[in-house]
Structure formats: structure tokens, C-alpha cells
Image (tube, rainbow, N blue to C red; front, side):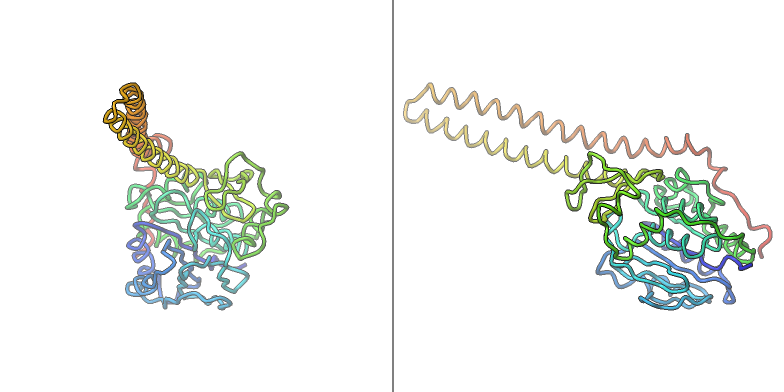
Length: 359
């Protein structure tokens, strides 16, 4: 039987420091490969240098399409491409963005789950929203190991919290404890492979650049009444997924949290546009009223004054709605952390140290 020989790591905001800690702790004779996806802008050029500067004894390579995966190497996803695993080869996918990002963590994790099954170890670090939670669930479904940075240790706790809600993880701890756990799991013999769910394979194909036709999406999702924030098409709800996710027929993929965030931004923008138009109309009607008064048309002047006052009232109502919406959003964001704490337990549940057998 083979050992666990593929480590896939994903992170976003606040993930560089724990990533460096993990990589610096891995030995030069590591009998596994490491693949890394960090959310970066399409024009970013510094991620490879930032990681390589503190990666310890392992060589850090910018992933290229068709590269053979070697043990003892770290491969970093380039900007604007999904990093995927096919057997022992890397593929850079041109598929649609997931949660508005490419590279996204979920495609890497799903492809690792499909390619290596129980031999895969998934590590999710600090970041906003919930990319990586679905992919980590895929790794667990295929028999792999799931490790998550403790929300109490993460600079941004949203991604770790989402993963803890979505699936049963093997360890949630600080970066150094995760590194020790990775070394231990790599030395272990992996159990036999399991059948990969068809839905995972379909989503990997879409991330690689395969067509996301209606027939393909229908195999893994059912139509909803929500429109895609990117293309305006119908979003279909991915069946049986945790967290709740959607795909459109173009292939764009969103979690429910990302859709909600996009909708909130759209509502805010629409209200501000409406406020501008209402205030412009009030100003215009007031000007028309003054002009009517100047020529002695007192009846029209009074009518225009009434209309201006009505528009001012509408404007104030919209302004109050904008402020209320902003306050509600801030309250929801702060309250969400309390809710997660109630659901997931106290700090001691996460800060599990498994370093007793390590030097």
C-alpha cells in the first residue's frame, strides 16, 4: 500500500504566515508533494517569491501545465489559472472563476480527492468567506485527511469556520501543530481507494475548461430562482453540497455566502443610484418652481414645491434605508462569529496539539 503522498494547501487573507510556518517545518526528505493555492489577483507576480523566501528545505516551483509532480517539491498555483491534479501531472485549468476567484481552492482540493483519494491531505488556512470548504468535504468523501487552521489562530476565521461546519475534520489547530500532523500522516499507510462521486468529477472537468452545458450542470444541480452575479443566467443549486453552492450554465460557481454578498452590493448600488436620481428630480422641480414664481404662475410654483418636498421625502427614506442596511450588515458580520462559536464550541475544541511525538 502507498503512503499519503499529496498535500494540498489553500488559503486567502492572512494565510501567508501560517503557510510559511508549515512549509518551513517539513523535512527535505518529505515523501509527498505539496500543492498550494492562495487567492491572488490576476496580475500578481510576487506569490512565488514570498513563499520561496521562507519555505525551508523544499524547492518551491511555479506550477506549469503538464508538469510531472515530484515528491519533496512545493508547487504554487500561478495567477488566473485553476491548479488541478490529474494522476501524477499538473494541469492549469482555464475554467470559470469560482466565488469570483481563479485560482480557487475548491477545484484543487476536488482534483486531489479524485486523483489520490485516501492518499490526499487537505489543509485549509485563514481567509474570508468559504472557498475550500466544499473541496475539503470532497477530500473526506474520497477517504483523505482534512486539516484546518484553528479559527482562533487564523487572522481571518471565516474560511476555517466554514470548513468546520461543512465536514468532519481530522484536526483543527495552529500552523505548527498542523505541520507536525502532516509529517505524521505522510508516514502512515493510506487505506484502499474509494469510488469518486460523479459530481466531483464533473466539477473538475468544468474547472479544467470543459463545457458547462445545461445537461452537464443538470447532473449535479437543480435550477433555482437566483441569477448568476457574473452573467445573469440561472443559477442551479448543487445537490447534497455543504456548504450550499450554486452553478450557472456558463460554469460560474458560488457559495450561498458569496451570492448573498454580491446581492447586498447590488442592492446598495441600486439604492444609491435611486437616491441620486430622486435628488436630481427634487432639484430640477425646485428650479422649475422658482421659474414659475418669477413669471407670476403661483399655482404652478406651489405644485412644483409640493412635488419637490415629496421627492425630498423619498430621498430621505432611501438614505435611511441605505444606512440601516449598512448597520444590519455590520451587525450580521459581527454576530456571525458569535453564532459560529455557539455552534462549534469553545476554544479548546480547536486548539488541539499533536506535537508530543515530534521533536
